[in-house]
Image 1 (tube, rainbow, N blue to C red):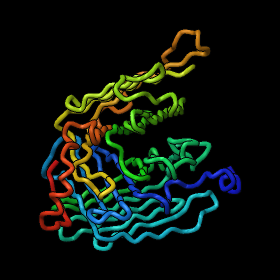
Image 2: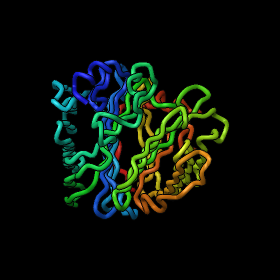
Image 3: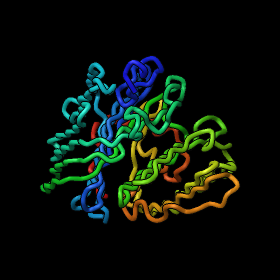
Length: 376
């Protein structure tokens, strides 16, 4: 779509920073050749007095290995943000610089992430190229579709910038050095604050099959999900109202959801007139690691728990007319052992949502800028 039409109809590069947002968080997950995950987060809660900036860096091997796995959470005092003019394709280059920690730089052709925390003996470099946008027909579009135009009034927004970029990486940590080529998922959240409870999942499957989903408590009394499934022959998106239902119920005629964080399982079935998607995800309960999340008062440690060794099974069904029988067109594992699954807020039994004093306890003890490493 030409740039003039994007401006007229409010379609913009939502991956670039939003001046009106209460928080903005960038998440990059790179799956290495051995199935392990390198995860990096840059996040800001604007106006928060404590823990207003957050950087996460972790490497989680597919099989637990304390010698090479690591997890760091830093809370810098300051980010320096620069935003450039829109490129001809509508994207806006920008950079986030965290003095003494690292930098994230986004251009129309690449995304570079560099961390150089020498006192922790960590140096990390990732460069993403060959971006695969959410929509092949509209590179600026994301999971929210037209709902993105209402981002100013929505409490939380989600945009996937790339579902499968080529990632060149180099990691130096604790005397171990490794480099290579992986595949990366890059996304962001922005809005007022994270919801009270949510579920998120992402996977790189064989034969270019990919799944991204996020959902949970969207509005008081209502749950909603955004789901995208990609394969060589299918490009399916699902969003409200088909994926919305009243909290306390198991779903609606168009969506059914089941989750058990203690067992590490999540499943959903979405059925619209001519398409039906069935997703089953399972992760070992002891594979989840804690993440900080942006709340109104600042970043709350261990407010979400994420596994990088989940199994994802997908079934795609179609029918020509609503009165016809369903036909299964794709079936099998979309991610056999290295998908990501996250339970956040009240959707995780590991999150102490009944103890808002965690931030208060943090204020009562001496300030620490760095937490880690933790073997995973």
